[in-house]
Image (cartoon, rainbow, N blue to C red; front, side):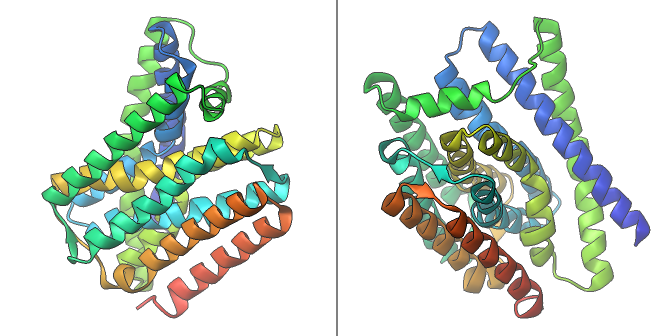
Amino acid sequence: MTLNIMYFCIGLALLTFGGEALIRGALASAHRLGISPLLSGMVIVGFGTSAPELVVSVNAAIDGQPDIAIGNVVGSNIGNILLILGLCALITPLTVRHLALQRDAATVVAASILFLVLAGGGALGRLDSVLLVGALLAYLGWAYWSESFRSAPSAELHKSESEEITALPKSAMSAAFFSILGLLLLIGGSQVFLLGGTGIAHHFGVPEAVIGLTLVAVGTSLPELAISVIAAIRRHSDVAVGNILGSNIFNLLGILALSAFLQPLPIPSRIIQFDQWVMLATSVLLLLFLYTGRRLSRPEGGILLICYCAYVWLSFSVYGD
């Protein structure tokens, strides 16, 4: 048991440092190549913070652990909203621009509904992965067009996301080194992380889906937590919320697509019966909070955190078998 905990912690550290190194290296390369801050913030930061989820879910799919592959994505999306945004809102109320986030918040809900529809077949296959990738490409095209040519206020949000990452590598060589190092740390860390996580699950007799939905999901969400908390402390509310929305979109439309394309994924019955509905409900709840008050207040942040505690309790006590 001690060895499994050690593997879990070492893997978590490698994933965290690997994700950080990859984002910094990719951002530095983007700046040197003249890629706009808008595109850098939208794709590299918004989706780059999901790199640990990507590598862990892909490795789990290849290793024949669909419960962890899918549970990691669904659990991360739930934790991103209830845990991370709840914590950020307690640090400072998150005021958001209605027009800046309505597209992304609505897309998170739409992506959650699409997952529910595809999950109705009991598994995600290669055809489903094509549909998910198509939806992701459509979103990216819509986002870039609306922000580049219509001067949407959310363009400033994504530019600010790239500015949250400081101390970038200065030379092309160091940028390449950080990118390669980050990728290697992510790949190696995911293997050690999964070894520890599954070992803990087997020791306590907990299903792998529960571990994927909770421990693994929270662990792989640390980059989102770091970026969003830093943004909240700096009073960059739009960045804190936008980072989470971008990550949730990529989790559902990108990570699941790649995982299912490499290896068809049967969906655990508990996710179909319980977790996917929690994921949809949290997305709708966030949408309502953002649209009604155009902010996440401290009481609303408290509600999100209480909901997450209730979800974790139900995951282990009621749906843990």
